[in-house]
Length: 384
Image 1: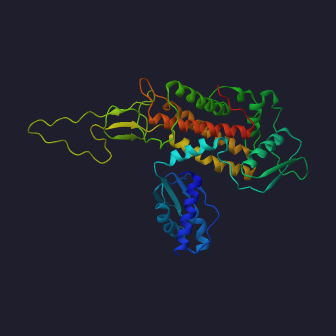
Image 2: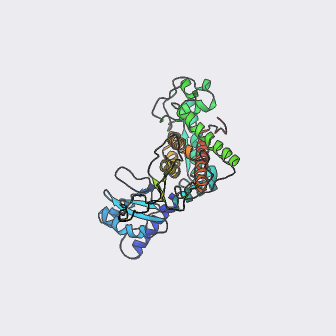
């Protein structure tokens, strides 16, 4: 289930509650779903109960209690928990990640585009300043992703005046110059220095462009190994395993040097004559014959970043803030760079369904990085 589908699921839950007389409100046109905040849980959270509390003349937690079973009954939803003043925290079923990856790969660089500004004309009046013109040029593309049209003109009164750059950024080259002007928030003074050209981890532009190049390299290397992407629930498929026993995924890697390393418990020993059989293991303890596989690092962070991208585009268009897109690309790149090491088989490991699913996730991340860089007017290299 994608974030868009989950939003519709929440609205259907409201409509059902209204239809059966549990709530007396107008069904809203939209329902925001975002990653859970502090104190939350699950995959996504929605504040729909807080929004409806006033019109319903009920406490928000009571509204959440009414909506909870309707959301929990929806296909693809594994659990719903009410937290805080009335937030609904939703845990999705195992197919959620596959659906998100499939949506991104199907839509390509148009993933995240919406219609929230359809029919609207956004007038951008800017001063004669390099940074203001670069920001406005970028906003024309970002506003268009939401169905709107931005018109840029030099006129008073100015309504888009970011803090000017302290010096001419042109010597940095097109990509680094645009990043230097767009990555800081409009009210922050941009830093014009050669640091934007360094190919080091300390340079966020390098990390974003390198992460995109890595996704392309992973695809090339996978083709050499004879396998391609195949979206599937992440963590659902073990690597090729030497046992028919069950598989348990642990929460973290125990050997960073061997990202695919796994631990197989020894086969159960036959009790010696006159001795009792081993005690039943506690719940959650791997049983003999179980292959214990680590959950890929940064997988959850990468999925959340990809799912959040459409929201970031909407906010950037609404608030005239291209820096939000730039900063989100850094978050996505960092998660991808932490995840990339588990995409390809390690050592004599054979390509498996797990690798095909991870490759699909990596390619989806590359798609989002390419789309975001394009909106900023920055190239996305195939090699770096």
